[in-house]
Amino acid sequence: MFLSIKNVPRVSWSSDKPLNLKPKISTLFFLCFGLTLFGLGEGLLIVSAAGASPWSVFAQGIHLNVGLSVGAITIIISILLLILWVPLSQKPGMGTILNALIIGLMIDICIRFVPTPKDFIPQIFLAVAAVLTVGLGGGIYLIANLGAGPRDGLMIGLQKKTNFPIAVVRATLEITVMSIGWYLGGTVGLGTLLFAFGIGPAVALSLYVVGKIFN
Image (cartoon, rainbow, N blue to C red; front, side):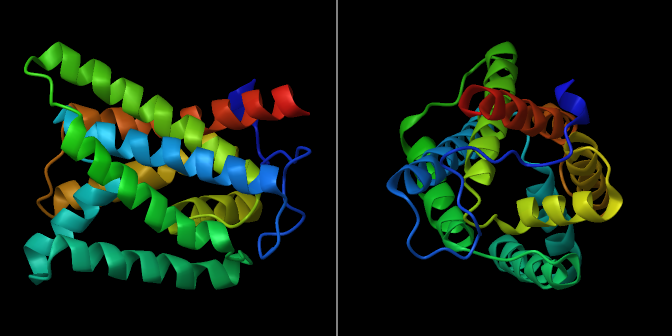
């Protein structure tokens, strides 16, 4: 049932609009809590050593062909995605800014304090936990409705234009950028595949469960 969800639910702590400079304390809390989980999951995927996220593979593939650093390419990609928001009628908010700050901080914390498992099986389990954690955090912060990150905003915008389920839209995006990155020379691991195919359903499940709990 959750795989068919097409809209981000609105609950009691959802903001009325993304560009809200004075949100309720509960709204701000769930925004930050969701982004913290999101960043934790991203960090766990890196620490798992099972493979980078599809967008990182995409950036790596471009890096191998144009010479710019992966970090610089990641920034450029984010800017281009925000430009794509315009025809998709997506609006930024404080969540768009906090997205980069909180997720980046949590990734650094994970890399510093969470050890990489030595064996392959624990690495895969950690990668699965990472995907589920990113999905849970993504659903929570999107429901806060204070502005999405570049990739999530693109997902929501494309969903509204196509009317396809969120799980399908997100999976299509992740698989597409992963495939392009791999074609350009980026490294794809099992964790990358788990993320590409699993993040769409994970986000949809989070939206469905959180919407049911707080509705």
